[in-house]
Structure formats: C-alpha cells, structure tokens
Length: 115
Image (cartoon, rainbow, N blue to C red; front, side, top):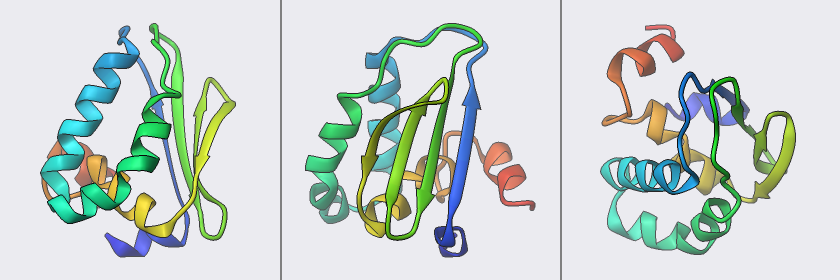
C-alpha cells in the first residue's frame, strides 16, 4: 500500500444521504481497525480537525481526498476545499480506511488497487 503515497486521490460520490456524524463515526471505526493504538493516538489532533470539517451529504454530493507529498491531504466537498491536513503519516493511516488490511470493503479495495 505504501506505493500510493507518492500521491493519491479518492473521489466518493454519494448515492444516499449521510450525516456528518455518521461519516465521522464510520471513518473513526475503520481507522481504528486498520492502525495500531499508538498511531491512532499520534494522529488524534489532526483527526479531530479533519472530522470537524465534515458536513452532511445528500445523493449526488461528493467528497474527494487528495494526498500530495509536501502539501498534505486535502478534503473537498463538491469541489470546495474544506481542510488540508499535513503529514505523510496522516495520509498513510487515513487512506487505510479504503486501502488497508481491514477496509470498508475488500472488493472495493482490490478494485482501487487494480487487483
């Protein structure tokens, strides 16, 4: 999975609505499944900042996460930047929600990685 860290973009288009709280809870749960407690603790402050920027989504809305080395991970809602979180370590952990050993969906992970 480390090869994606040169740069990476994930564009998610929602087919049903979710509250920001549901997005945050799901992300936090999946992140905790994919990284150890020490890593999670080291990311805590940046996760809190990221999670505070999530908004409710309705069908047709999209979130895009883009990691650029040296710039960080930018979260966009419908094309508008919400936040950029610094750190290679943050990207390596956060993208594990979709690309890790215990992702949101293994078939999706495999398709994203071209397996």
